[in-house]
Length: 302
Ligand SMILES: C[S@@+](CC[C@H](N)C(=O)[O-])C[C@H]1O[C@@H](n2cnc3c(N)ncnc32)[C@H](O)[C@@H]1O
Image 1 (tube, rainbow, N blue to C red):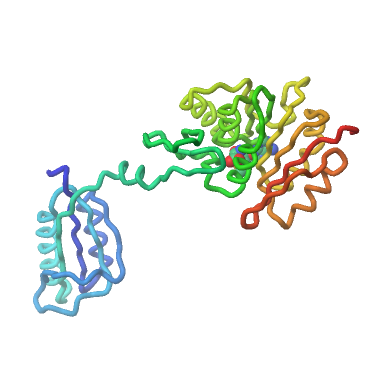
Image 2: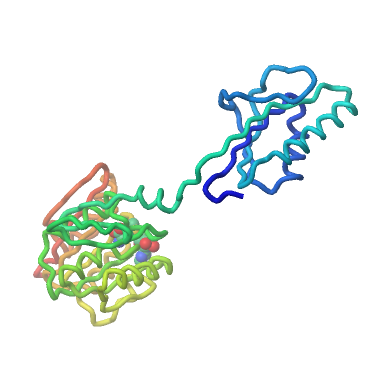
């Protein structure tokens, strides 16, 4: 066995591919792929009279060469041919390929990203971007890599804010990316998400970045500490949910609080503005493709 190579063996039966499939599954534990349109290769033929190469077949990916399997298949062909009185044969081709380091190949595919004041980078990238604030984030199941418009718009908004010592709430934290950005700028952050995976990932990402949150809970805005009145609230969830949250947002905000709303498709922007217009005024609007991000300020007289 060679760790540095794997073998690729094409098997193209000229007859009875169903029987070949059965025997291949029976006699090998290697990975088998069914293929249409096999590549043009220098195939060997096994059978009595060569027939035209078929347009479908199988590929076997194995750590060792498939010689024993091919010998076995040849024996099966002879037996079947005799029993069925048919010319049963197959084309075959084997080649050795260097094994890729798949982890390294994947890691190289995840590019760091600059957004506003921030530089979002996976933990395996050691290069920093001069002048930008690094946010170390490895891809995970939680939303919030900085690659979606709704997150990017918020990071750009946060880049323009003075948040040192300000208390903020990140509703639907996902990976925690927005709170990490605020904490990097000296903000005090409360974070929540209804998804356990998101809160776990946020916890891990704060640790990776050597940062601390003031509070983190699994749940939503209505689970915020009863007396908390936030300077800044960020919500990147769909418009319907943002609209429904309005009474809770009013409860946990105060005069002058800033509200950053994202994840809003432009078709639903009116509904969101309408729901919040009684207590908040629009101070900034940004859009990327069909995604809108709204910055609102709580009225002083509400
Ligand atoms: C679009 S992601 C945003 C993630 C991150 N804040 C960002 O901006 O990239 C929305 C997140 O909100 C969470 N979520 C959905 N409905 C929620 C609710 N009612 N309350 C709290 N979190 C919610 C989801 O689990 C998801 O992690």
